[in-house]
Image (cartoon, rainbow, N blue to C red; front, side):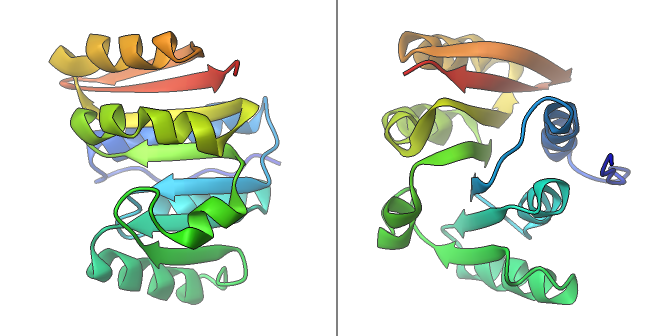
Length: 171
């Protein structure tokens, strides 16, 4: 069964993440997902819905954590989606649930680059990461950092001026 999500009105970076998730649903099965920078939880809920997977949804802003928790409850997904407030990978529960088979970022290029070592250490070998929220003029930098760390680009999605990558870990 294919899970579809209406993307009309979403930010182009979020649309790119949804496109990446829908592309991946035909190719992979995930059971342990991390959504870093979850905002209102749309990507966490979409991931949980596509794969009936456990998702840790993380944001630095308490309002985002509250919104994600409320949206999970509204969609009867509170047993699958756990929202946490954390600055990056610092929360103990994030480390305890690792390794993840899918990590989703819908942030800006700078934090995506800064967290590359944490992505590598929290992702299963052969795991997938979605990197979105990258402005086009920084896309080559993000791609270079991740490929240097052993990630293989599987798909690039462009919604000008935003770029997203789907990458697989070989480490």
